[in-house]
Length: 234
Image (cartoon, rainbow, N blue to C red; front, side, top):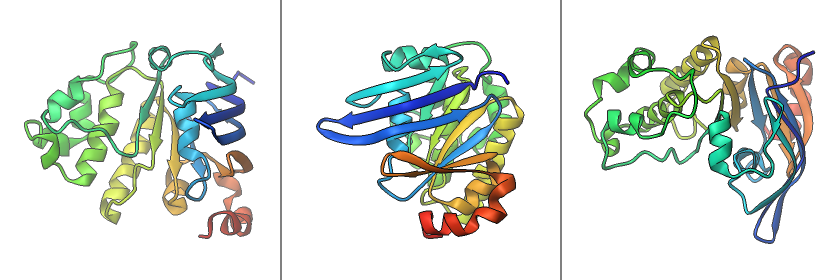
């Protein structure tokens, strides 16, 4: 079997003296949508930030397309083809929608052009000249996802993309993730909303205390619901 697009082994991470990750092990194959599930404070967001090189200290292995990145700076990791869409979204209030979309640099070929992005996100096309602060929460989330599609990144890491959004917008985000997958992108998704995750993902890792404690494919979900209820309280 071909090597995974992303292979994380024994990943440890610290913020100052706080030891957050205690040996994370995950794999993401090209074209998959994989979720990290877990309660608040389990280490899901820190895993994404550690892959991106945005923690104080890390050790272990992060291999992307066979290339070791655990010692690399975050700018080199971005140029390798990994992009992070943070939970806080990072929309620039002083820029309009199009300016926000065009802000991140292109890191490699394979990204979507503006016309393709506006076809995927018609709401953003309608609001192209609106300042970032005038967008709804759902529109800001769409803009945050759309912005990294331009860069040419191959692996998109989405941190809690449905957090605080109305159910109808959550459904729209789900359709977007499925469309992104159909276009050949690979997605690593942090979610607390398990019911949403099961509508978009191929596989799920359950995270507790900074390590993976279970792994379940979507096909195995019916037989794993008891365990997931225990882990997640759903």
